[in-house]
Length: 249
Image (tube, rainbow, N blue to C red; front, side, top):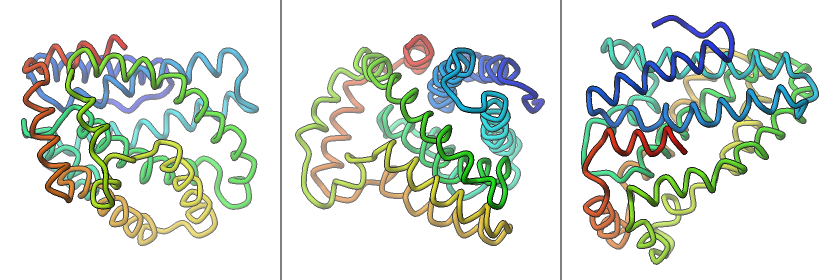
């Protein structure tokens, strides 16, 4: 699969991945369906001047996405993968996790690892400080997509309300996954990598990100596991229908 050269390339490549996953009835199509929605929103934000430096944001968006595309290619080829993506792709091969878990595992690997690495690469050293405003501006765009995604999930996962009833200290790491918190942590990691880039530092960050993935893939606490067991059995059994709902959000 070619790497993306620009955002239009990226949207087209994501479309191909989505179509292929739909044909294979594979859950690894859930995350790219969500990702294409966000990518289109970022493209629109650039066109409407929502960033201080639209050209730089476009380069960051493409560099960021290419890390996912490289991970996806490596996964399909059985090649080396970062630990955080390995967990996400392995989960996509199972039917015992809810839609939200699959999305969160992809978001965890892509935001907590890939975003930090990409931002540091686009704005190394002291230049990272100039990126902060635009990096934060993406949060607003992401927040604008939440209702669309929640509505799409609700159409194919009607028992998601059960998770709202789940509480307690053991379940918080899964239920309270916060996009805002993840992006704030990604920014701090981007600053660290921009100041001291190295493969060792990236490897260490991957280990931390994989540690965050484990309780999402296999949540602690009997109450959470029981709730997830119930929710997954109420979800639409058609993987292509779920991909279609997410892609159409």
